[in-house]
Image 1 (cartoon, helix red, strand yellow):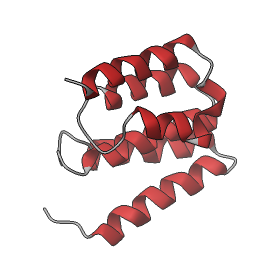
Image 2 (cartoon, rainbow, N blue to C red):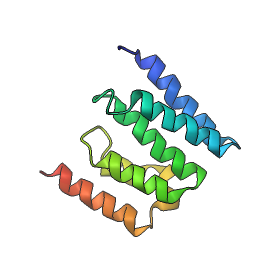
Image 3 (cartoon, rainbow, N blue to C red):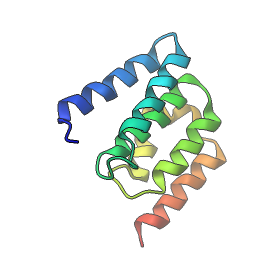
Length: 114
């Protein structure tokens, strides 16, 4: 099924808006739903965007262990999001000093050089 870039952009913006609102549970629910509907299992090329968004929603809403788990999964797949983007992403601030975050970056650095 083809989806326009506009639909994808609106979906990602909607997820981001929810994550900045009061209802963390709704933000997580919608981001998970986007992964189920449009994740890399469904769309190998663009699905990684929904998975990246889910990791960011987890980071913004506070279940940092879930954010790190999702980042590890997302970063283990080839795609447009590499360690540089993750290092510079201001949303990563709350988890940046976590040793698991550093391990994810190192693993992706090694993955990128293969």
